[in-house]
Image (cartoon, rainbow, N blue to C red):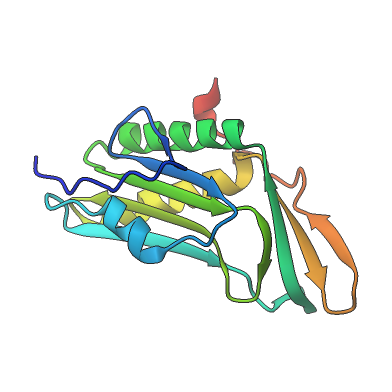
Length: 169
């Protein structure tokens, strides 16, 4: 199998599978970098999901988000997500997950997920699984800062029933 070797960044944690890349960082994350890390010449699809800071939540004007993470556990969850992807979609080639921490403003990218597979159907399904599972299992917390000056930690313990990682046990 011919692959494009992803660039190694000293901030990155290399997963169990050397094709995968996981990162928790204060620095801005790059769509181009994540795409290149997921790209594989044997695959016809690289699906990416970019989560960005939006201007409102439930009708309230948002000015910023703040993220905190327990990095070692979050990286371990990212690794388990990749393992589950390879179990469910055996042809998946690369899994890349980067997440920001710190204060982000409108339009900033907070999370990037990319998965490469030989075909688009599997790549879309695997990428959706990755972001949904990350949101419900990774120890990453979000504080919303609103235009009225108020702020609040949101989605703490708000995992939907049945969404927990089945692969943890």
